[in-house]
Length: 100
Image (cartoon, rainbow, N blue to C red; front, top):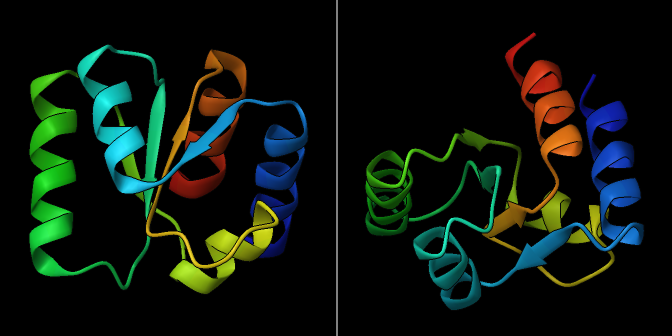
């Protein structure tokens, strides 16, 4: 299941529907640009709390989705702790994949 999810995340990246980087994602959350935020399983406690609190406040779904290495590799970049998905369709499919 995980490999299928990472391939789909790669597809979303190629479709220009993925934003990464902590500061950029925080700004996107505040402007309600995202339909989903992905955070790595190995994010620090403070980072985890910060993004969960922001997403809860702005009513944006957040899910844990593997290690920072796996997330970075899926989008063709170096390690990524947090990723925002800007497309509703991609977000809904990813939520179904992760919650299954």
